[in-house]
Each structure stands twice: as C-alpha cells, then as structure tokens.
Length: 308
Image 1 (cartoon, rainbow, N blue to C red):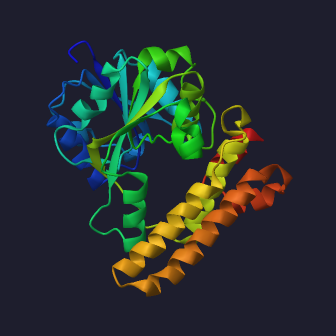
Image 2: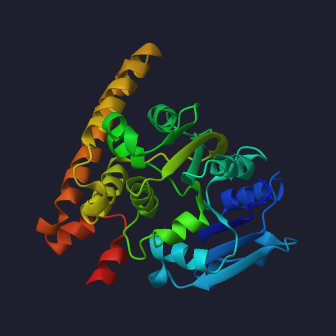
Image 3: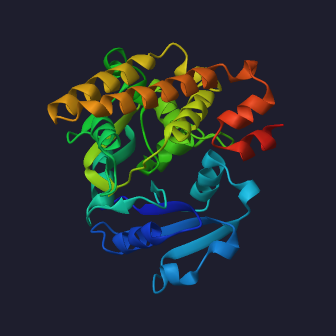
C-alpha cells in the first residue's frame, strides 16, 4: 500500500467537540496522511486552535450560500494531490488509529474505485437508531459490484461520505461528484462507478463513531431530500429496487425489539418509518409539488433558492 498517498477532506460548519476528536484521531492514524484540507463554511466560526501544531493542514473558507454537498467536495478534491481521496464529516470520530489504513486496503483490488467505513452508534444513541446502524453497517466487510444488483437492489450503490475513500483515477474518469446536488453525492457517484463496471468496498474495520437521534420530521425531511436526489438522477437510480430494503429494516427491527423485550418501542418504529416512507414518496414526486410545500419538506432550503 506504500504507493498510495492520502488526502483527507473535511467540510465543516460551526465545528464542535466532535470535530476536535476527529482531528485528534487523525493525528494518531497509522497510515500516513499527506495533507488535510478543511472546507470551512463561514470564517467567523473557525478557530485556528482546532488544528494547532499540525503542519499538513490547510483551511479554505467559504460562504454559506456557496456550500454544496457535491460541489464543495469536488472543489476540495481538485485542490489536493493524493491518489486516494478520503472524506470525513465533522462529526465522524475515528474509533481507533486504523481507520485510514483500513479504508486504503481495498484499493489493492484494481476494480475497487470507492470504499466506505462502518458507522458505530454513539453512547447517547437510542435503541432503534442503534439497531439501524448495525443493519446498514454490519460487522462483515464486502465488495459490491453490478452483479449484486439483483440481491441488494439500491443498497448496491450505498456509500457514505461520513467516512469514505475514492481512487482518484476512478473519481476523475467519471467526472467526480455532481457539483450541484441536494445531497447524496456519495451514492450518486458510487452508482455511476458500479454501472461503469467498478466496485465499491464496504470496510467494516474502518470504524467511526457517528449517529443521530432524528425526530419524525427530521426523518421525513432527510428522506425527502434523498428521494429528490434519486429523482434527479434517473441515469443511476431508474429501475433499481429501493422500498423493499426499508421494509426489511422495519421487520428486522421489530423482531429485534421483541427479542430484547421492548415491544412497546414498535409503535415508535412504525410512526418513524411512516414519516420516512411519506418523505421518500413525496421527494420522488417533488416536481408535482408547489415550491412552498417543497421548502417545508426539505432539510436544505438553500438548495432550492439556488436552483430557482
């Protein structure tokens, strides 16, 4: 793996204690990091003390209205030189010192163009979300290719820039991330990569602590935006099975709640799953909705302002 040079890219906005832990974790990584580029939104929220004493760090400041999930990352990628691009979100805390090393390992397979790590639930994570994390990020690694579409459906394309790496040559061949997207730039790229004949590696040993305790409306809005991104890219997602994976998650979570003798949580599961499903279905049909309804449904109101 000595031939791989790693550039780490982290978009941040109002960094907090989790970001500090991420930076401290990067300092301890066993695999050498050539450079760290931080794309900070709004200079007033940045403190140089976050990266004090780190010589391989660069910080670029941008305005909130200039941030885009895909565009900002694409801009950062163009400003770096490593042949492996590693992305973290600001709240992804490395579980140990081997995260980068484990993300790089799958690239020994020439077909692998992207790899993503395992997200572990934080200590404050609620039971249902904790199980969802284990469902989406199991303990076993695997490599996904076009041949897995009949079995996995849309999950074949799953990839997360919370903790992910990309082979620069594959990234550039496919034109990089979509430069204007509501979000889901990682999955859009992974889908294009797989449809082009490449592979995406899920690396269970590349672990970060990352979870959210979303309420019903947050789940609704997140799934609305997810569906918008899919509706906007039929060249990737058209004809790919998707809802069945959500149904499988609900059934397995309900079984788990019964197994741990907490069946009363099934009501919460059903309600939140309903909000997710409704958000997803509305997002898929967003072109039929008035702008006022879209702005109520979305997590990213600034995206719709910039597309008008």
